[in-house]
Image (cartoon, rainbow, N blue to C red):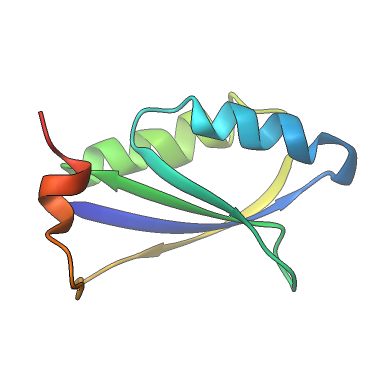
Length: 91
């Protein structure tokens, strides 16, 4: 499983619609509204780097209006009390 953590700046007036659009994308597991330098944290959990790239480079930045800036973190390892692949990649 590949997990991407995307920090997002959004036009204030569009934050609700951006959240709704993000949640419609397959692979986006969670969207957090946060305080600080960024407006949203988007968790993406997919099977491959290619899927992650498609979501971030195309679906998020080109298909969703209101996103001003993104910063992407790609996980190298995941440590959890839960079996994340069973939870997020169950078929």
